[in-house]
Length: 117
Image (cartoon, rainbow, N blue to C red; front, side):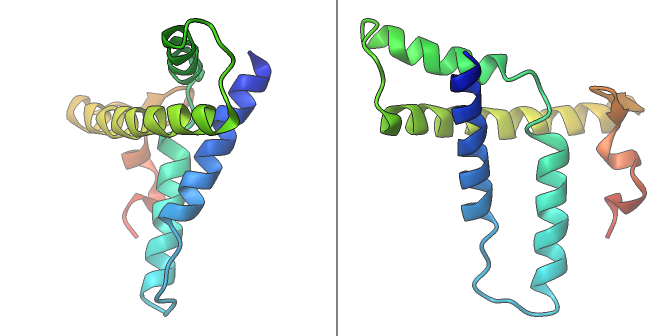
């Protein structure tokens, strides 16, 4: 399970790296890129990762218990990270709507001083 969680988290790093590659490095895009990366890191991967690991294990069940290849683990993880991004967005939205102060033991994103760049 720990190994699977490590692989799941590694896929997050790969996807984030690909998402924030910028082809146009200039004084306007660099701050936006940094802010977006910070926002993503703050809101998306902070959970217990139960959903992600369960998603991979469920995929394994569909293969009748056969071991998954590294590519299959990567693809299943990538699909679940799409769900995690959506969940992160919904939690931020919920915090704003409910005027929340804390989420997962940390100040809510919209309450941070650097929320508005």
